[in-house]
Image (cartoon, rainbow, N blue to C red; front, side):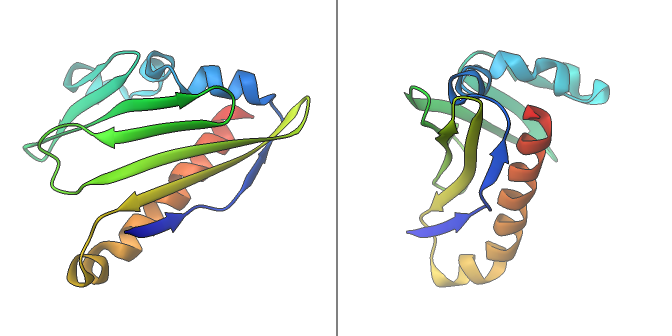
Length: 133
């Protein structure tokens, strides 16, 4: 199991508020770019769409109130992984946030895609950090 970790980001929002936002994917419907709105389907627990002919998506599989949210790919995705959002209270109004992606991959897959996966994790961390502020 390979692990790709984003940097910890301090977010000036209580963990319960960040958890409520991130654990309901309906909160992100307004963030889908206009040109993709008719190609993406979002429910409270899933987000699915098509990219270059490949149907891709995430489903929320576990919620640990105010501390952890875990996503897995929907069926048909070529890589088995878990996308984990970790939330850690710093104070009543601040939360440390960290994205972790754990994936089952062989040496060749890691060599080919490891740096892109790390870039994705870093960009996702920054995007959520900016969105939540």
